[in-house]
Structure formats: structure tokens, C-alpha cells
Length: 350
Image 1 (cartoon, one colour):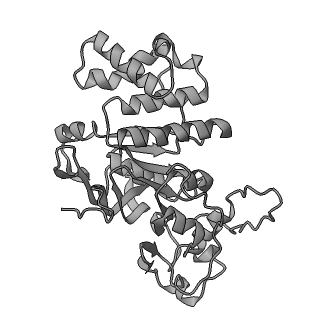
Image 2: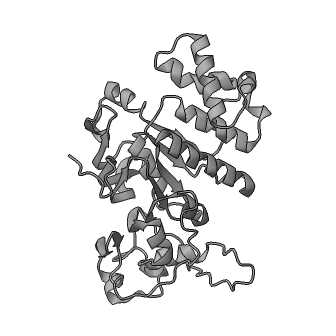
Image 3: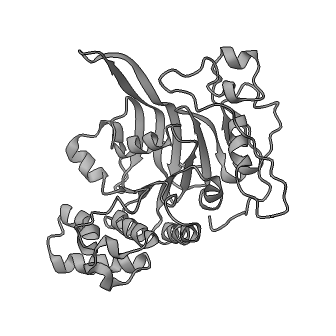
């Protein structure tokens, strides 16, 4: 069984050694000649009522990780231990179809694009009420009452039920997507960059809504993002990924003020400062993200790292604890003094 969280909250999800490899086929016979190691030996946990942010550049494996948690893609190996509302611990990676259907009542997803994630031919009543229908609520009047309640919960008027998605703005559509995700009373919500397609002013409104819902409903979030200024205000802990592996993990405050991996430092340097007079010290990384089908020898980040030495080019660094509660995958993590972001905005509703 998974141990309880250190602060007394119960452990909800415990991911251990998760890997996802996509085979590379070649030739007329479609022989397997290699694999894209999209996720490699990833481990993390989420407690009840907690938000864990997974961050990194495009192609780092964060979305694939979230889809493995949902079993939208089949993991290659690893354990995905989830504690159900009944108190039982199940391995998501090994659930049979009937068990998987029950599991999906408790884990739902908010999609990145509110424009393409809603069926344009369905009314809002049918979109939000579809999960209820699929899980046994046959009475239309009951569904209407429940959908009306969900719309009010996300800040929309119940008379919107008979409208179609084209009648709404991007922020309103994402609220509809959130209402649909909440229809079955989930305990964990996977949010895949839920505000990246929205205007900045609307982003703040949607994030505030998600934080309010977390408090009201006791939700936990797996929050996939690339914008660290959003992560700073929304998450409790942060996992940083690079070429399919975790390179650093810690509390949000620790990540933003005392990073231990050069890649984290580079990501933090791109976070906008609230002071217009502040001099920008952005670290521009040369080259592209490593190829997960043929990652660099040694540390995958070394071709772009200004601190790299010979050992970085030869040996893969282990992910180890370099400070209490802080893990880093870097040969020099204990000796480097890296710049963080001083304005953490302590709390920010978290």
C-alpha cells in the first residue's frame, strides 16, 4: 500500500517507474527498428486536494505522462496506483475494461483547446449531460437539473443549456469543458494546458475558478503546463521533465526560489517579472530538445547546458534528493548556485 502523505492528507495517486515507448516501424514489412522513449522511468505522487504541475518544453513527455495516467494510452511499464473512493488501491495500468470504466468516474480530463473539445452539433445540455447518460442517468429531467447545477457551479447561466458551442467565447467554452469534467464527481482532474489557448485576462478567471472548485469539491489536479507564471500561482508542487525524464521535483516555492537543475533555471528565466524596470536575464538555450528516439549520451541536457563537464557527457545522472523534499537529476546539483525567481507570490490562492 502507498504510505500516507507527510502532512496527513491521504495519498491519491502514486506513479512508480512509468515508461511509454512508441515503436518505430520501417520498410515494407513494418519491422520495428527502434522506439521513441516518450516517457522513461517517471515517478511522482499526488495527495488529496493537491495540485501537481508537470512542466517542460514541447516534446518533453508531459502530455504522454498525463494520458498514461488516464489510460488513454497504454503504459509500456510501471505502476499507477490509485486509491478509489471506496478506499481500495488499484493499479490503473492493469485494470480490465469493466474496471477501467468505473475508474473513469473518479478521474476526468480538461482539454487544452476549448474550441475542438466540444461537439459543435450538440447542445450544452447534451455535452455536459453525456457522462451522466453514459453512467445510468436515463431521466432527461434529472440530467437537466444536474447540468443546471453544474453550469451555475462554473459561473454560467442555466438557460445556456439549449445553446450550441459556437455561441460562446473561448473562456465560456472552457467553463463548459470544466462542467463536463465535473459531471461524475471526480476526485482527480487531469488538466492538459487548460488555459494556453485563452487570452491572458480570461486565463486568470479560469484559473481562479479551478482553484475555487479545488477548495469546494476537494479536487486534486494533475496540471500539465509550459507557462511557469501560471504554475507559480496554481500548484503546490512542480515536476520538471526533459526528454521523457524527470530532471527536478520539489514544492513550488522551492522550485521558483532555489532550483537545482540548469534546465529549471533556464525555464524560470523566461518567467515575466512584475517590475517593468527589471532587467531581463533570460537564459537562451542553444539547439533543440533532445530526440527521445536517440537521446544524447550521458545527461540528455548536456548539449545545451553551460555547466556541462566530461562526466555529464559520459554518465546518465541519477535522480536523487539534493535537499529535503527536492529531487534533481544533475551531477553538479549540490555544487551549483542557480538563479530563481524572487517574487514567488506566496500563496496566490494555492
